[in-house]
Length: 394
Image (cartoon, rainbow, N blue to C red; front, side):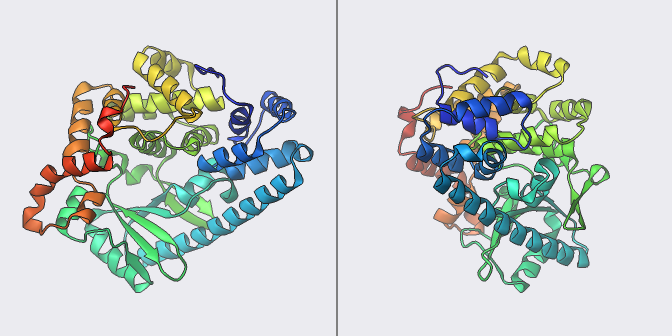
């Protein structure tokens, strides 16, 4: 892997451990790195920030536990056990909710969370997740709200439960006040700030659904190819905030026999090839994921994919990797699209289409909903603290 500037030993350790399986070369590199004087406070804080503590413990405990201060190793183990306990609780609740939906003939497809932990990582304890993501059909929103309310779930007070909200947003947030379990019910596969050449529901294809076995229960899931594209869109939409998200892509590829022809065809039809390419480059460069040669050759022809991925790699380990300003964020969203028309449309949507945060901050009656498209840019600039003047182009 190459960076514009030398990264810390601790960061290299994180990259070695951010995978479920170490080959001999990576294991030897980890053993060599751990011999250095390690700033354990930095290492743990950086790993936690990137949601990779379970993998750090899993690999260090397997390869070189004797090289780690006892208190550090014990704290990592406690964190691992706590994460596993939480994940088991969430998984049990997911199965209950899916059974409830099935009893009422509601089609529901969970993704990320327990499904991704099992299908990509092969172990519920190796991935950090804090809620349950379940995709439903828009026509079932009313029934789902009633069912979840009957089981002690309350809708987040920031959600607006009217038709305008449903048409303009993509999810409802629910929380169970007794268990603390949070559920995100989604009826769209992407946020409001992306446009597509083909309707994003193109990825919702019941004929290609697969089953993931969790706790002896068969759970419906998106196909591995569609899930990869959904993850790529998600990561790009959030500007690749955590290394864990790159690890998700890497582990999904490494643990499954992917149909790359299908992936490339669907990415092309949706107009998200560059998003896919950036994810693949990051997985390849940071986590040594092998990508088919013909796809790598196509990626290498796209200079924007390479420049963006290189910038993101450096940002992961930069001392000044704070939130981007409005201008930088907007330029980023234009550049990650191979089609300029889609990029400009994304920019317009990002600036003018109201988010759930906007709807919560200013409550307008339904007949005044169009005013949100005027209010949104003002609220956006306010939250950015006029960061537009501090931004640097990507």
